[in-house]
Image 1: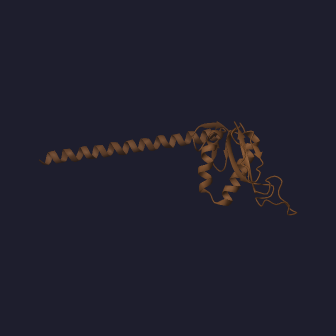
Image 2: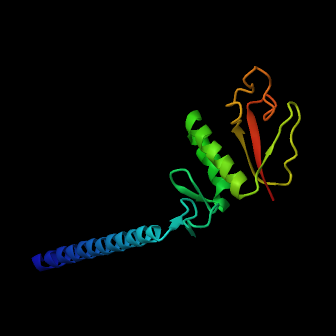
Length: 162
């Protein structure tokens, strides 16, 4: 009877040993993979934080950098999620950078909104509403006149056409 118990205990120890060995191997593989990703970064290859694809950082406009990298294909799903989690100051700072990046690399245009009229954005691939940089979101210029860039709304619509 004791021999049967010893045999069962030794199998349990073997199972635990095999699991520990597997976890150790997995940890080594994960460490090696992180080393490869770090090496790629040294070669100028960056990874999208959303889809995990790799991109050459020498190609301007492929990745938006906000502290992490996001590829253009992921921006339209990433931005609404992230902007909802940010405080106002951080959101405005990142949306200003994002607006500039979209205009510079992806043919985005500032669409002037007219109060009381909904702009036609049927030909838009992606759009965001951002604080007007010209009046800092106040809607007014220095002399107190209405900002001509945002029509006094304090925000502008940035539209990337299809």
